[in-house]
Image (cartoon, rainbow, N blue to C red; front, side, top):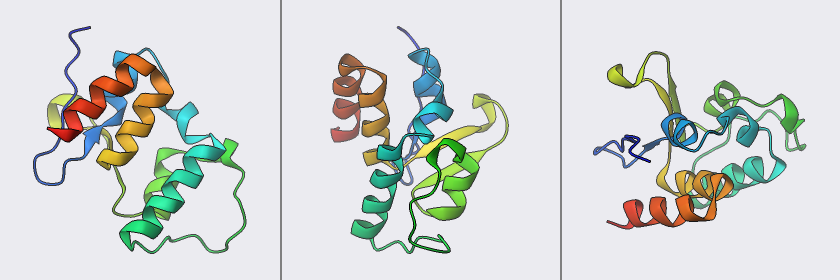
Length: 118
């Protein structure tokens, strides 16, 4: 649809906020899915990233936000205030960006997968 979705060259992170805006979705709803939390937890395990969760119980995912994910899973997500022109938004590990795209739509999922694999 002509939207600009940036990927950071230094780590490959993709602007999830821009992705959702391009697809008319609210990223906060994705963060509230149980499956999203499980995905973050598994990717952290695979990447050797220690989660900052205080206990192993399943959290109330309806209360989770980008800020809470940043605290729980450092290295997988970055959230920066400000507009896109100054690098603002919620930036996701490429594997998480693919999962977010799948949540948005099948067509978008394939497009984002192609970007990540390039």
